[in-house]
Image (cartoon, rainbow, N blue to C red; front, side, top):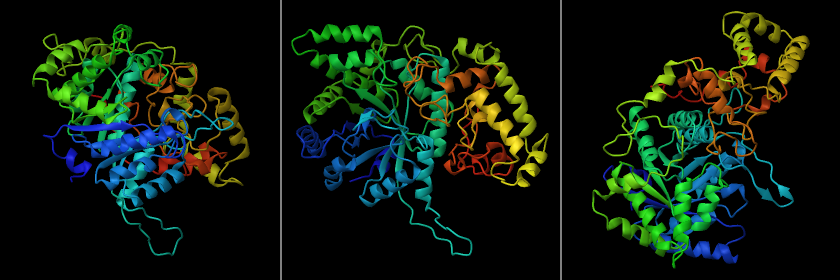
Amino acid sequence: MPTLPEKFARPQDFLIGVELVSTRGTVRETRAARTVAFARDLAAAPGIDWVSITDNAGGNPMLAAPALGGPFRDAGREVVIHLSCKDFNRNALESEAWHLASEGFHNLLALSGDYSGPGIGGGAKPVFDIDSVGLLTLLGRLNAGLDVTRAAGRAPARLDPTRFFAGAVVTNFKRHENEVMPQLYKMEQKIAAGARFLINQIGYDSRKIHELRAWLERRGHGAVPLVGNVYVLNPAVARVFRAQRIPGVVISDELAALCERHAASPDKGKAFFLELAARQIAIYRGLGYRGAYLGGVHTAEEVQRVLAIARGFAPDDWRQFARELRYSRPGEFFVFPEDPATGLTDPTRLHPAYEASLHARPATANVTYSYRFSKFTHGLMFTPGRGLWDLGARLSAGAKDPRQGPAWLRAIEHTGKRLMFDCRDCGDCSLPETAFLCPESACAKNQRNGPCGGTRDGLCEVEDFECIWSRAYDRLKSEGRAGELLAHVPVLQDQSLRGTSSWANTWLGRDHLAKPVSPAPPAHP
């Protein structure tokens, strides 16, 4: 049977993936046994190209994905294992990657992950040592054959290359410009870091669905396989989504009301929800997506019913479905204007309001004196070969402890950055890359390569404050540089530098700036 990479290499094929959500406990537990039975039924079911298995979904402790992947692997079917950064540091992620490769699991979905939920004894401490971009970079190095040479004088040692086929997730189902655009830029960074396919987040607006596809094509990424998320709703799930209890997922008031209306039917809306999912599949196929990713289903019979309904549609039915699936929220931002003829996106031009804003210099409360002062002093002190760069390097190299630099300078750094940024003394500073907003003190997940997908109308999913990447976008946009938001090398923070002087580490070439890992994403259109 063809592998998943081989299937994605055939543009004429429209692929079907099904999500399998793990449960808590061993495979002998009652709930887990039902999930295992579902897995075995899916392994034998026709019309399914792969099954995705979640990694501690919602941040909750659950049975590890490989325990459920065995039936598919043994049946010669394709499996995508979700691998997230919330519970593992980079060493544990590498270890898990070796484990998966050894067990024959080569298809991975790289995720930053949900914030950690409660475990034994209370809430778990999240890790987020690296993010999805860092994980894709790690997997790329394993695929290239990891160099594990340890000491000078020893012969180079390179491990056998792995053959991971890694994908990533993207969402543009956001309300505000400063949420949507950072998501699109991060998507490009994921592609540059090695994402071979993309799956969009749950959403129910055909114009947003089309806009994501149009953006990829406009930016030269049209060949990257894009898979559409089809989540089968039910009344209870619709209420959860409406309350935004799942980070990054929300439905409109109109769709929520429609779900409540159908909940009163004799079958509690079952037929309606299955047909809605089938119509989404038709829309994704019609818009040139490479497949559909089916979630919210619990039996192989449900999967087959959705696929059978989708097969019964006429080739052009998707156009009418797309006109009807327009459940956006009031005031939602769009990159492109609406095409009146189709109700979808007109990808030939930018939305007039968005295009006008690119050439304006909007005032924003995020552009503070602290930001302007930080930009000036950074340019003065940390521009190689200019300003105070050479002096700082000499002072740091000649200090009693070069890792800290001169004691008086370290005191200035520590006090100033603590007062201005609530600095956590990480020693590998990303302030210039986040528009001088600290990703350690102001981001619950320490996201240094763009935002996670969990904002709720611009607010962090964990803390009730505005996402630092939205604020950073606003700061750069006020200067006409919004497209430079992620135009830096992906950041893999060096934790061994924690507690040392980030100034000295920059001057002496010890921080991440001296260790670029992959090319930066393209600039603004």
